[in-house]
Image 1: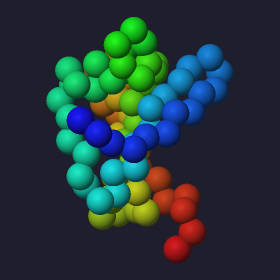
Image 2 (image 1 turned 180 degrees about the vertical axis):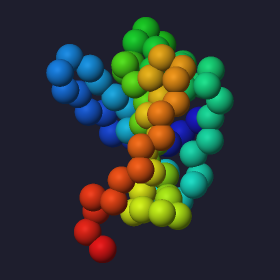
Image 3 (image 1 turned 90 degrees about the horizontal axis):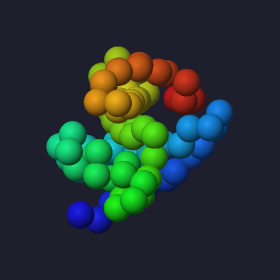
Image 4 (image 1 turned 90 degrees about the vertical axis):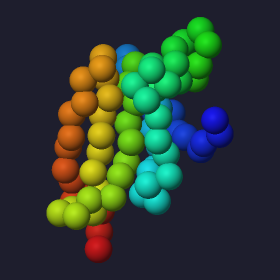
Length: 78
């Protein structure tokens, strides 16, 4: 599996962030857990997908500890 990602950190946590505005990234929860594995993957506390949204500029799916939270945001300028 090949994909482009960014890795950000703050307040002692780090995150793998993927721009999925073209809706091409797809992975199971197990694959995401493997990506976040510090020993065999990229290593991160969380995994964030930036997706298209019908109601705002983008949708951020934050996958932390196998719990998915959807946060709608319209902070990008039009």
